[in-house]
Image 1 (spheres, rainbow, N blue to C red):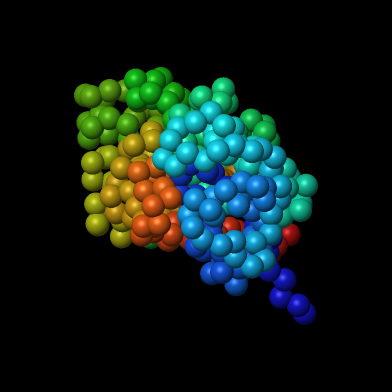
Image 2 (spheres, one colour):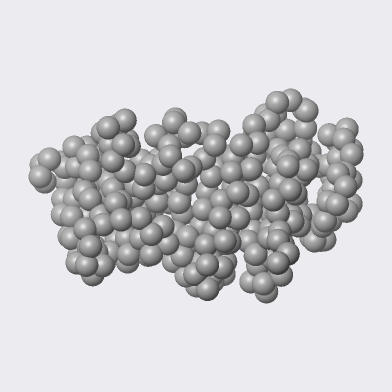
Amino acid sequence: MTNIKPKIAISIGDLNGIGIEIALKCHEKISKICKPIYCINDTMLKKATKELKTSIPESFELFETKGDFDIKAGTVTKKAGKYSYDSFMDAINLANKNKVDAICTLPINKESWNKADIKYKGHTEVLRDYFGKNAIMMLGCKKMFVGLFTEHIPLKKVAKKIDEKELITFLIDFYKNVKNDNIAVLGLNPHASDNGVLGDEEVEIFKAIKKANKILEKNIFKGPLVPDTAFSPLSRKNYTYFVAMYHDQGLAPLKALYFEESINVSLNLPIIRTSVDHGTAFNIAYKNGKINTKSYVNAIKEAIVLIQNKKWEA
């Protein structure tokens, strides 16, 4: 039986940032474990390699995402924002049509998307809208994963989003995707509200945990945990998967601990999507300096694991 490498579409990200340099540097390494297809056209690829003073690797297969503009290293521009969005949409369409097994995304710039009048704040929102599914944003590495109940919203709006029914749905979907029987759920307030002294959101969280466990007929979800100790060394010995109520609650500790190696995974979708867990790094783009590629390589590896799991399940 022939061992066929999985096909992974690479959304190239903002071409004014470090994404293309990461793709070029890692091509030989990742080509040993998968068949990458890069959503960038030949014209833009040649412009990027000229800026980087490097050559295009052999067998660098392209899906020709349309567009032609001048690369402005480290700069927020409308055209770069539009191109990164179009590259992402091409990758999604390839996966949706089963022409690739998964997609992996390099970093976009939210301000560039805004300049290009793109209504979304990030990849996950696009996927949620495209598929009409409650896509879940999970970030981390094999040592620790964090699922985000709310994502890119102002902090003042988070408390209003803590709704029992919505949280029950989220918890059950999260469990069905990660298939782990021991998941920590964080409270929202300091000290998880100290039994209502500092807020009443924990009542909703507690009820959601209880009902989700009842529906699953297992004691899967634990909590609500006190947020300031949830990621302590002792707690991390007990849990690998955490559910945070808002973006920075989960990602600040994750990035403090595992910034260079963590990745982003979109759960609860009909396609597989992984991503680097870092930004465009405009300050070092096209300077041929030292760029850490661990997150990208880990994202590719996780996509392959998810592809294999999907085939086993089928």
